[in-house]
Amino acid sequence: RSTTSGGSLWTPQKDGSPQKPTRPQVAEPLPAAVEEPFKQLETRAISQDQLVAEVKGIYAGLVMVESKCIEVDNAQSSENDAKLNNEQWQALIALHRTLLHEHHDFFLASQHPAASPALKRLATKYAMPARMWRHGIHSFLELLRHRLPASLEYMLTFIYLAYSMMALLYETVPAFEDTWIECLGDLSRYRMAIEDDDIRDREIWTSVARHWYSRASDKAPPTGRLYHHLAILARPNALQQLFYYAKSLCAPAPFLSARESILTLFDPLLKRPRKALKLASIEAEYVKCHGILFTGQSRDELESSTNSFLAALDNHITKIGRRWMEFGYYTAVANSCAIMGYGKEDNFIAKAFQQKAEPAEAQKLKQEATPHDTASDPDVQDALRLANGTAGVVLKRRGDDSVFPFFHVSLAFLYHAAQYNNVVDTVGTSFPWELVCELLNSMLLSYRTHERLQSEEFPLPAGRATPRPLPEDFAMKGLTWTTNYYPDDFFADDKIDDDEKYFEVASMTDERRERILWLATRLARGQHWLAVN
Image 1 (cartoon, rainbow, N blue to C red):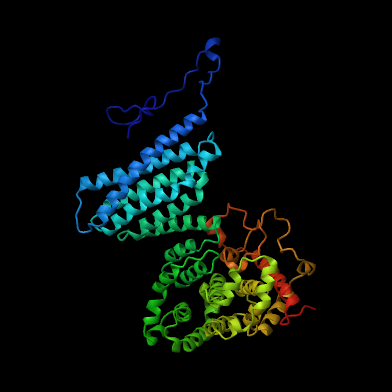
Image 2 (cartoon, one colour):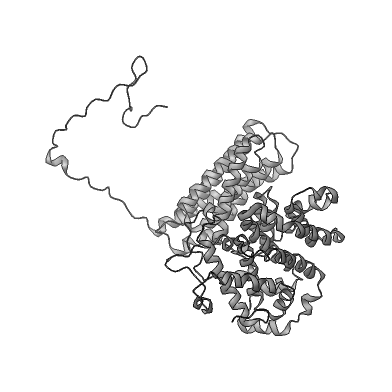
């Protein structure tokens, strides 16, 4: 394409080839008057009254366009059979584009550096980010989605348009950065979902959506909704899906709709004939165990499925080697969530962990509750059999540091449970403590700084200004039972890329070993299952 910014880069000859560049000439000295620096153009600061008038004017126009979008979207949604021609689709896209531009202008004006605090609060007061998404983007996307495949071309056009606008707002209106990040993830997920022809494009947009949702969850770890979205993007990795679904239900702000979404993972495994399942992977057998625990279906198959999984687990760990480090912390988190009843309200452990009480009230909760709350719950007991059976296989592998992430997560869960006498009695009674002691003693053989284990301070590596979390730390981040485990600034480094978070380096083995020993020392002080000499 041609360039018109002050001349072309090369002059075409008749044969179309560029001219050779000529040697630059030495410029004559400029007169003194010309050498004087240019004066900056005068600018006038905008007054509060002008800003208020500007915002009012923009808002009035915005409301008009918004009302029209709502009217048109509702009308078209009720006429699913009506076919739209090209001009009608283009008109709808133009209408929603206008609304997005009005919102953009509103945000720039109301969040202007010179705006008063009251003016800056207007966007929140009138829920402008949510209205922009609902009426400017989401309703129209759903309309387009229900008209597929005829609307595919128009849906692609609008997704790119909306994505560009959200990316612009992400750069220019940082006050609502968290919202823009999640919206960018949602738009990427829409784009991924409608890509059927090009697998590579689908994978690219899956990766983009995962990036934005991971960024969003880093900024809002307690939000279960974001882990639900990551679970959907984890397909076809069943174990990773289970991990994210369980996490979405056991976060401080659980996403209850995940109770329906998770059935898309469980149903195919529960409905598959038992004979066919034997030929499937060990992960499928494991996920089926969780499916039975979650749904209560096929209860008569739980024992055989659990036994089948446990019988194959040791060989599986040997076969995949260090890859089981990742599988290990996924498994430990999922097992812990199963013990919590996947966040069910009638599960006492989940209720205790969700308690946002003052210390005195928390103590009262401990005293009033009795082990009977969970000991008689068959769902909890079945979950404990799976979790402790898994630990019984994994913790036998002394000398294999690929099991350390599983061990670390399991002890972190017990460390939190120890704050509730009734909970730790139920959870800890059948845990394989003899294997724990044997593994801890083998780990102590290569550990020297024993005084650090006695300290109440969280063990951070010496000589590092900013903590570098372990991969399983990121996996546990946002769960109700890790809220009092990490220091406040432990995840402060926001420059760690998504790929780096779960990348294992050699130095992490020693750090993980120390963390495990430190947790075990804390547990030994308050419980009778462990003792430190």
